[in-house]
Image 1 (cartoon, one colour):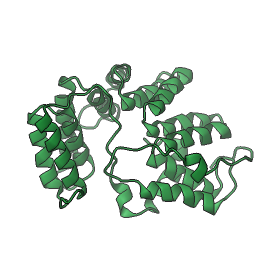
Image 2 (cartoon, helix red, strand yellow):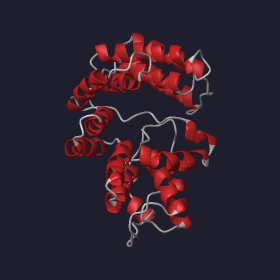
Image 3 (cartoon, helix red, strand yellow):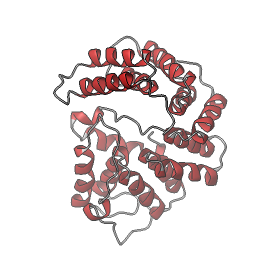
Image 4 (cartoon, helix red, strand yellow):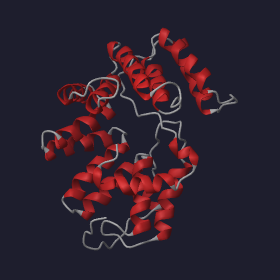
Length: 280
């Protein structure tokens, strides 16, 4: 998710935020996904409320996991994705990371066999990083392309990034990253901005991050905050502008699917003047 040019800025901004910033937002899913029966969806939604402690429910990750498992037995692929997400974030002390990664793979496999494009994207990420399995970039590229072509916003992001990083096809990769953003996956603005940073294209960097931020990407908002707080990438230091992005990021529900920010241009107006590119 965080590429080389933005890694320092991202983590600086992240650790300056509140503890809730460490919770992972539920991903933007493709339109084609097995949701299971009506009961499965009701059970899934109850699990989500218990996971976040909302809707009158007491926050209880373990119990939320039980609800997701029950929802899975009734055909819900997104319950498998949610449970896998918990083993990556909420259940960090539940067994060694290697064991948790392997269980995440079994959950992704379950959803993938049910025909869920977002699960193919998740498996692509596991193959790319060697999480829960042996690293296999060729398989990662194959699954990411399959997911992207099936309409998975996350698949579009991974496919675009791998085209750039592994195939050195920047033009096609950017097209897929832009498609990911248009499909609601604002986090794709990070790798898209990274491609412009490598070319020292200040306008491309800011435009990509703002497009991602407008789709509700907390990482993009955090990096924008860091850029203006520190005066990086052709921007003058501007504490109020940095605070604007930071405030929007902190106000987001860490357990909800990212929601577009329709009035971003009004809340945090675009800067009219840019300085020449400066490396960080």
